[in-house]
Image (cartoon, rainbow, N blue to C red; front, top):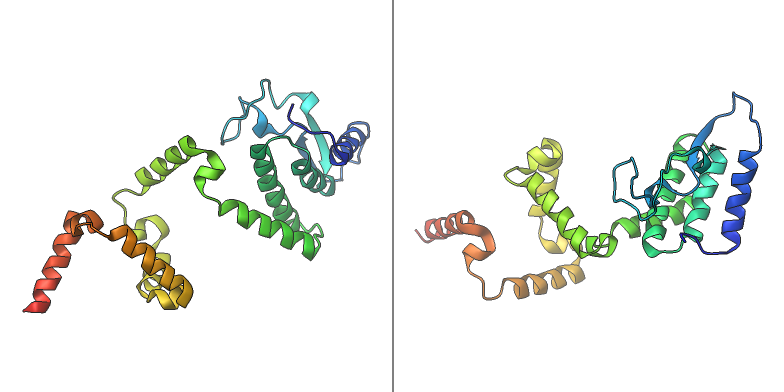
Length: 220
């Protein structure tokens, strides 16, 4: 079962049933909504991690037309009655995207609601991949990112202007970038991580050779 019984589930299905049993004017803007979220199905058609439910998410029984306001509201309700932590994460992510999109479409969103969801969204995306996906999936994601970036410069990855800005930020002392407390912690972590390692281990063969050359030139 993908849900738990509470008032939010009751409210959700009231909106769904009302939408199923009405006829709206053709001029009213509506959006298609998957009653059981599409991402919960194993054979989902959109990109992303497969779900755990069998069946076709796009059957008529699982689709309903909602107004923009209704669509936003049901996505606010969904995270409150799904039964697993993964489902809660996915529904929170979708809810935040819905709220940002609805705001862009001109639907009024209270500043408190927007702030709460924005904060929730930022917390969610900042969590380590191992927590978000599990160890196996996190390793797969890291490998894909590494393969995509291997052999490329910052200019290739993020563009010339952003690469220049990034290099400028990285060249600043840690105390300017992070403040005194974070800079001190970063220094301790760096020294622990690098302790007992050769230059080749820390910087690679080419990087170590370049550093030794630079050091010899300074001596001379």
